Image (tube, rainbow, N blue to C red; front, top):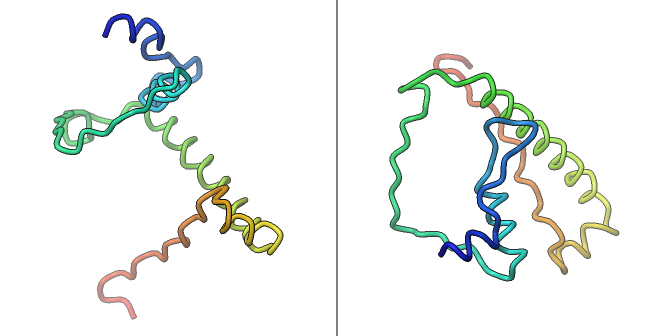
Length: 113
């Protein structure tokens, strides 16, 4: 295991964020070596890091704000591209990218018409 960990290089650090998706970066490094990542369906992890236990840090809030902005831009571009048959038809055939889910409609408030 130690040899594998040395080849992968361990968990990377982000220069920009204190909080980020380091597991995704680690999996990317594992795949570069020709291996696959696995999900352990029955694994249960208890993390006490939500607002119930402690307030959210500014670094974590900034990361998720930027993450949501990036994902939103990407989905907006994909929605526009899929309006064109020259992109939509080949994308259905080749699966270049997954069409974004429709924008959710905000729930109605109780007691409002």
